[in-house]
Each structure stands twice: as C-alpha cells, then as structure tokens.
Length: 241
Image (cartoon, rainbow, N blue to C red; front, side, top):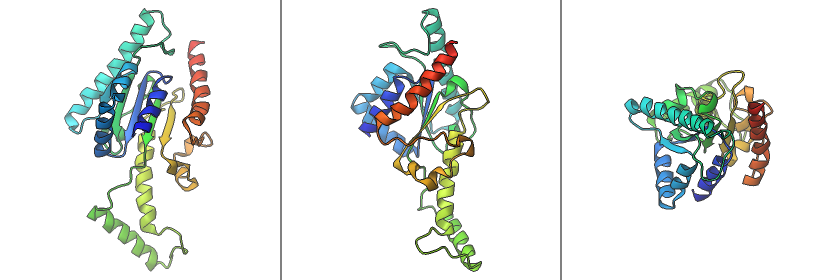
C-alpha cells in the first residue's frame, strides 16, 4: 500500500489539473485511506492537489463532483492571476484536484470527466465481482452448462464459459471507468493501469479498441516515467503554443 501511495505521489508531481483514481471496492479504498492517513501520505497528496472521495451515499455524489470541478477551476484561475503557467508545477503549490472513486459506483458509470476534469485516470487492481454472490454463481453455472450441452467443451487447461463470463464482467467495469475520460476528439488523458495482470495479452485484448497500440507495459516506476513523461511534456507544450 505504501508503494502504491508513493507511486501516486510521484504521478501528482507532473500530472496537471484533475486526476481520478479508481479502486475495486469501497472496502479496499477505505483500507488504503486509513494506511495513507496514518503514515502522512494523504497530507502529502493534499499539498499537491485538493483531495476528494466518492461517497457511498448516492445523494452526496453530485456535491462532491461539483466541489471537485470547482477546485480545479479555482486553481487554474489562481495560476493565471499569479502569471504562472498552470501546467507547470512549482514547489509547494497545490494545483488541481485528486478524486478517489470506486469501480462500479456512480462516478465510474454515468458521469464524464472530460478535459481538465481528468488528465489522468488511474485504475488500481482488477475489479472482479464477489464469487460468493449466489446470482453470479448461477450465471456462471448456466453458461458453463450451456457450453457443455452444445458440445463446445474447452480444451484441457482452457477457461470454461463461466470463467470467461467472470473475467468479461470485470473488464466491462474496467472499460466503463476508462471511458469516463477522453470524451471528444481534442480531449486527452493518461490511462494508468496499476496491476501486473494488465500486461497479460488476454486482459489487454479486452481493453477498449480505441486504445489500439498505445499501450506500454512498465515494470518499474522509472519505466512508467519514461513513457508518461514525454506524453505530458508534449501536451503541455501544445497548450502553450
């Protein structure tokens, strides 16, 4: 958890405006939040960006989203007033906002984070559904039995229809979260997937087709910086032009 927090802190040093970080569940998010508060990382996040959390109460979501957008707007206006390019970080400056959200909750499915609302979307882990769910078990059992009835048994070592359904439901949730950013032709954002399983050809093959070949696998933070650094420098340069 500490390594994840430090990774995010390093990203905040150069990503402008809004950053949205999706976790697989509220319980995971709450556990990480507690650890980061105890070791001071949450305070460090706040020194870089105004921090927000997706509420579990649906009635509070609109308020949080409005305050998140307002924090980004205000930070950009202040930067202009101080004649500081708002796409350049300066020591000690709090610029933009950071929103922690949950895959499958309201912010990942029905709302858009276009333009400065999300210059980066970070997905932590793979949001597999709870295998203890009776409904999910029945669905998996049904498609597996259907596959068997049609004599389409998987080859030895291959995944059956139930396992494929389970993974596809997970990737559908991932793709919905990714789709919250880059909402029009001129929009841009970095999509950062934090889990070694995303490097699997099978998992990568289920990511949105529009991502195409623009996927780089980084095993270390240094490699990630090597990929992301030029991307953000290019975008910042084009905005200055």
